[in-house]
Length: 253
Picture 1 (cartoon, one colour):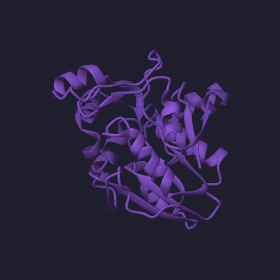
Picture 2 (cartoon, one colour; picture 1 turned 180 degrees about the vertical axis):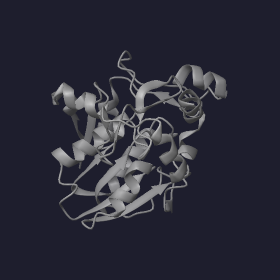
Picture 3 (spheres, helix red, strand yellow; picture 1 turned 45 degrees about the horizontal axis):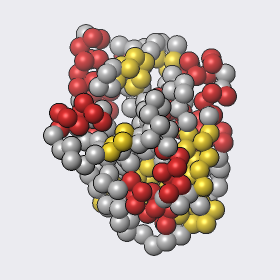
């Protein structure tokens, strides 16, 4: 049964997984009961997390919150290295993740807006190339695993920069190929199978390399590459099943 559950979860596209029945998730969680790993977002513990990904990563998906490794890292980062949970902030969350939405909406210190062109979870429908808010509107913006999908990432980055207030900040994460020095994109590749092979997913249009920081800077930001996870006790990294080499890209205006 556990193998069947794992297979089904891996095959469900994430945009549908994020709206899966809470009751179904509770049933799945019963098969993973234990105390070896913990989701810091929900506080719930398990024997292990579910595998997830096109090439399945073991111990990746928390069945209660649907958090992945990068989400759990971001939660800890926000909690321990920012004023996100304490200051009065106006927040734009682009392509919002299921594990964050209701928790961020419940925070009384936030004026929290979710937005995306396709996500069923977002309340504002928008094209990231033309964000429908005036300049200097938001204190904080989140935009994770989006830039590899859009036609013009620099334009999208610049739009996020535009709507941030001076002194505002954003976290903009994307998958990186650290073996690649420069980002690769080729818009002549349109066949889904070819995109899957070259970019890793059939809806990706580029593969970022080690120049990702420079591309964010082209969008206008001052960028801090924070190796926060590498500063944590290995026992914490293991407990929360965090991505061991993920860099947080803190983008400041």
